[in-house]
Amino acid sequence: MPRPGCLLLTSWCLLAILSGCLLAAPSSGTISTPSTPGQRPVVDATTLDRKLLMGYQGWFACPGDGSPLNSWFHWFQSATPDAASANFDLWPDTSELDVAEWCPTHFTRPDGSPAPLYSAYQRQTVLRHFQWMKDYDLDGIMLQRFSSELSTPALFSFRNQVTENVRAGAEALGRVFAIMYDISGHNPSTLVADLKRDWTYLVDVLRITESPRYLRHRGKPVLAIWGLGFTDRPGTPAQARELIAYFQRDAAPQYRVTLIGGVPTHWRTLTGDSQSDPAWAAVYRSFDIISPWSVGRYGDEAGANDFQRNQIVPDLAEARAQGPEYMPVVFPGFSWHNLTGGPLNQIPRNGGRFYWRQVYNALSAGAAMIYGAMFDEVDEGTAMYKLAPTPAELPAQGTFLPLNIDGYVLPSDWYLRLAGQAGKMLRGDIALYTAIPITP
Image (cartoon, rainbow, N blue to C red; front, side, top):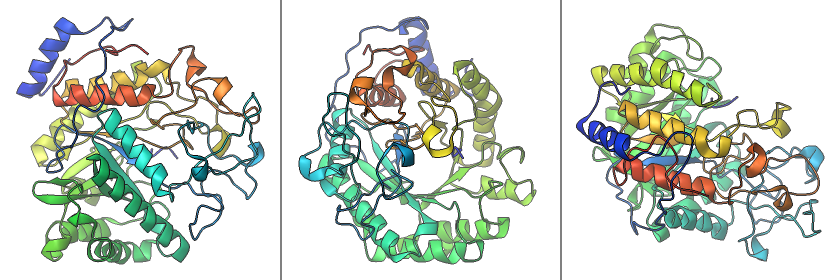
């Protein structure tokens, strides 16, 4: 499933809104304010404040990539890399890959040239992703670590190498990274013990928190757990309380963190996607930071406006009253036709306007940090990295989604450029624009 007026103003938000009212482009158009890539050679790793962090799945593998999997992972349903088994709707722009990085497929482009994919096990490829983050002045990522996979030796080894690749990219390119556990599909009986054990491994063996690029906040490393409290995810209130207490204060000092909870959209009311047990109310409010999931909860700019009014504004007020910080989620669009048979282009991107409206809404409500879903999620069509812009760059076989599907002529890097501008707006480097402040 999709993982899933300004009230309560801070002084920064008020200033940004006043500036935005004077400088913003009309909602029907854009202005030509040039982007300045690579403005910050090094991102501040001591705080989450004023940061837009994207989720990084890092789960793509292929035969011959050197990994213990030695098979297609997340790209295809079978060992045959063809249209009939494709799991993804967006085709990544692989034009910058070296031939040594190619994962050969059965696809060809309309001109007859090969259409390769990539593996996140290859360090060079992950380093290139971090180069893009630097090029477009992005802060960094939260690396998804799917806890249910970690008991399988080959997947454990694969995930650890991707983690090492991410660390190398962040350190080489001056970005930040942190771990986000996704507990989907985890055995409920071992959930608590497995997360504790794996975090100990990451700290003691991989030593990730010793990296100068591992993100810290409130003086501690940042760690996120996504999925607690959802109706279709494992975990009881008692298990959640134990995990939160462990990571916040019960663990030895080297394992303690500033803990983000990736919580249900309706965490505040215990309805909808949230379990209804009243004990969850205190659990959600005990995270250091809460990040309610919003992917797929609305499908256009009008829906995003309703979501701001009905969810973000009261959520932010409740968080401030109860203590946690608040990190809303934004996403560019959604499509999982090849994965599930759903409609192609289920939630249209509208040339970036859908994404921009969400960022504007989050900031105008007073949010001081944002989670972007996702950097590389092509399976569910939320990817922000470089993508095939037109059918000419797509394979001639299969059904995939080009960036121009909604009638806008866009470059492959358009969503990286938008995220760079969103980050500048979040930091107060530019005014709060109601409309996209750059042109393709």
